[in-house]
Image (cartoon, each protein chain N blue to C red):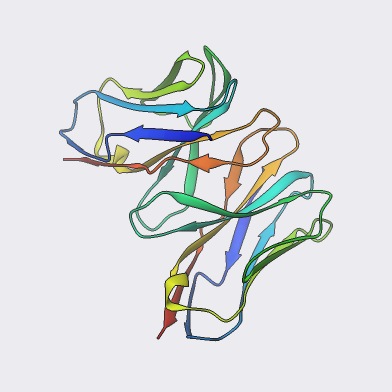
Length: 112
Length: 112
């Protein structure tokens, strides 16, 4: 059974800092990996999707990498802003299923 | 463009009452559909997923059920709610093949 772990559970940084969020998964037989953002009381917004054959994806100040063999992904946020404050969720889709398994998230607070 | 609608946004129900949450998708055909639950301070738990009309896979045995009466409609139901059913319920869809996920805005259910 796939398990997804995110470290740290919470992170507080000053505005302008570059930061890295970590995600690890136990079964490397994945179809894709997706990073989401969730604001308090809201649904999930997709940030980046990495197919299993890809190593990284970039969108603006966000860069996500995937090392399938080691079961790891990182989300890099450059020049953080207070508007980046949210919970960031990592999720993997296994090759045998068509449903995502989520980590418990990293709650990010960017201090102005 | 594709959109996903989920309602109601909030719901307060007494223990033992029935439940019906509805989710519809527009702008696509033959989507995979999903119901997730997010308990307070916890990650997302997959409840049900469906790859076609009348095809429902249950991930967690409980007093909830799901139905897909039409291609782009997914309904989450319960005959008698428990206190433990409280949480944030999210509907999602993905294209066939599991590429990408898009979530609805969620329903906050409080069972009292």
